[in-house]
Length: 110
Image 1 (cartoon, rainbow, N blue to C red):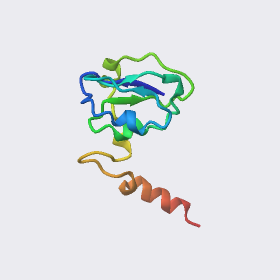
Image 2: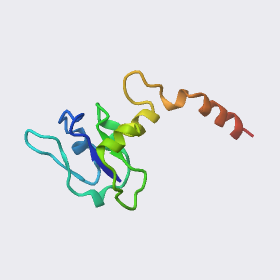
Image 3: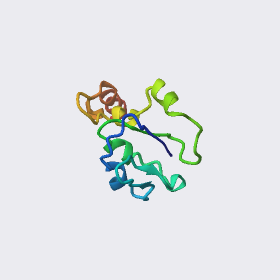
Image 4: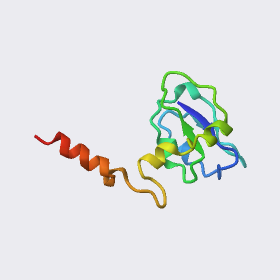
């Protein structure tokens, strides 16, 4: 479930507002978007994937909101973490080219 929009990192591009399939965010004139309907979040990670500055954190727990601060998320390196794992963003390696994907393919061959 979407938990954090970093006030210090967000550049107000509103990509999260546009890509969210369940209309979780509200656009704010001259400000960063707000999480307006958190319980509608489907934990699809689209907002985090499309955020160009890694200003979002989506918790993998789709059932309930967690109590975590932006400071904690930042300290744990979770802002934009999903986006990083799939290789989106400058200087990141696409997941399909990671060695473990090759090893998985070898293991699953008949």
